[in-house]
Image 1 (tube, rainbow, N blue to C red):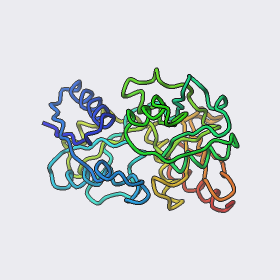
Image 2 (image 1 turned 90 degrees about the vertical axis):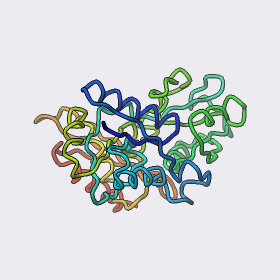
Image 3 (image 1 turned 180 degrees about the vertical axis):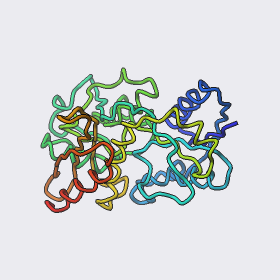
Length: 293
C-alpha cells in the first residue's frame, strides 16, 4: 500500500487522485491521506506567512515522519531548496503551463476597459500585467478556484487570472475567456507540472514511481526552478519562466525564457542550451537577468 499525502483543497485532491489512479493502473494499491497545511488555515497574504512553501511543509513533515509514502505537489508551489532525506521521485508529463483569464461577459484581456478590476494574488502576474500598459486596476486576492471565479460572477471583479492547468484538472476550462500567450504573461517556474516527492531511501516507492517520469518535463522545470533559485527569489516573487525542449540544428535542445519584475517594468531574456544540463541554463539566464537590472 502506497500512502499518498495531499492537501484538502479541491485542486490538490484532484491532482492527487489523478496520480493515485496512474499508480493503480500500474498495479499498486494507493490510499489518499488528507493533510491540513498552514497555508490552508491562514488567510493572510502569502508573502506575509512565508510564501507558497507554507502549502508543502506539513506534507514534507509527514513524509519524514513516515506517516505517508509520497506527496503530490504543484511544482510552482514547491520551494527550490531541497530537504535532506527527500527527493522528487517522478515528474510526470506537464499540463499546459499558460495562464488564463476568466472575465465577465466573455471578454479577452484586450477587451477589458481601462480601470477594469482584475484579481490575482501573484506579484509575477501583477508585474507583467502592469507592464502591458492596459490601465487595469490590479487587486490581490487569495482563495481556491471556486471563490476566485465567484468574485467575477458576483460582480466584485471584472476578471481573474489563473493557471490553466488547475482549471483543466478541475474540469472547468469552459469558464476560460482567454488563454494568455507567454509573450504577454510568462508563467511561474514549474507551472502546470506536478512533482511526486518521496523519501530518498525508499527504493520500493522510487521503483513504483519510475514509469510516471517524463524526462522532457523534468529538464524544463529544472531549468525554470534553477533560474528562480539563482535569483534567490521565493515562489511569490515577480519571476516568470518557461522552458521547452525543441528541435535544434544538432538535435533536441532546451529553450528557456525568463522574466523578472523590477521597478520600472519587467526584464525579459531567453537562452538555449543542452537538454542534459538544464540547471546550468537556468543559472546562466538568471545571471544575465541580474546583470541587466
